[in-house]
Length: 112
Length: 114
Image 1 (cartoon, chains in turn blue, purple):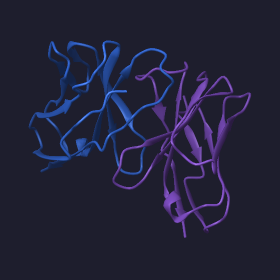
Image 2 (tube, one colour):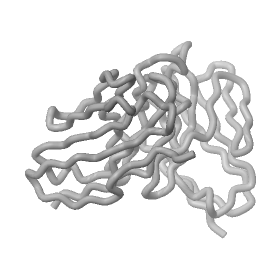
Image 3 (cartoon, each protein chain N blue to C red):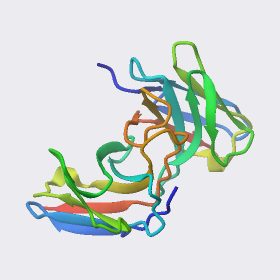
Image 4 (cartoon, chains in turn cyan, orange):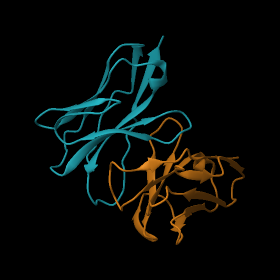
């Protein structure tokens, strides 16, 4: 699975839009890009997944440029409850053994 | 519907002891994976089981073992505990063998080895 690089931490204020960028220079043709959110003492929670261009759901948007070597998770109008660690993962969307490789993640701190 | 349930939620063990952690997947999910998360780091893959067969194993010593039962629940066993085994142990389930997007995690078992 491709290695990912994300900022270790980010700070934001309530109501702002937060963009977290992930680099995955060695992404393979069959790889999807997936983001998970984790609160302290809880398991990671799936946020969004994409392959190319833009994906949007009720929680976030995922922007993927044409070369797919990076991706940006966008959280609109964050609140205090969005304070969490966000992980970017890349890997095959199909049958690839079930092994998720987590990096260190980005610790997002939202302040009032 | 119940999510992925893990037991116990917290556990304190002494070095050298053995521990068994349990996981019940979401109803209908046939795949269970185990992860270890040390404080300040991302989860690290330990095992995956699908239809009661081991599908993947991470870079962990043989002291770590697991199995999946006919009802798809799973146990993670760790022998000869070391201080470094202190971590949050997470179980994740999915309805098929290996989707990157379809995993649901439990809240984990916090293991402290003293």
